[in-house]
Amino acid sequence: QASSATKRILSVLGLAPNFVMVPCPNIDNCAAVTLSDGFRYIVYDKEFMQEIANTANTDWTSVSILAHEIGHHLQGHTLRRSELSESRSVELEADRFSGFVLQKLGASLEQAQAAMNVIPHPTDDDYSDHPAKWKRLNAIEEGWKDAAGLGNAAPEIEIPELEAIEHTDATEL
Image (cartoon, rainbow, N blue to C red; front, side, top):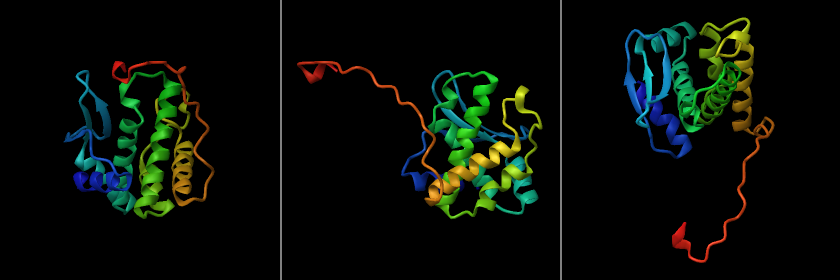
């Protein structure tokens, strides 16, 4: 099921997978990781994913969770360590991505948010690496609405630009 969900997610993005899916029983989680050798993985507990789907009464939960983890890889989140506040920020970026992808796949907003509604969250996220539930639901909604053409443009981000480099021979680059 995880493999087919991953293929569906990547199909709306026009991308091939650049990570390996690894079932890991008894971790009660799903996570994107990049090892020191540069290999990328999404590790997941099948039973954990099924429990969430059963509790929410929809299979969209697995797609949502996997899209969130794929978002971590695509946005480079697994390539660096971060402080708690930055961890919360990258979680919201991955949530936004998940909402965007799920809308493109045909999920309703309720279906896109279903997993987040059943996963436990901290009430005070000041000391957590994951944001409060309401922030995560809002991020999913923003992504979903953007994909539907109903929301605001993507958040304002600064893209660094280097000064031009002059070369007489393009082969030197």
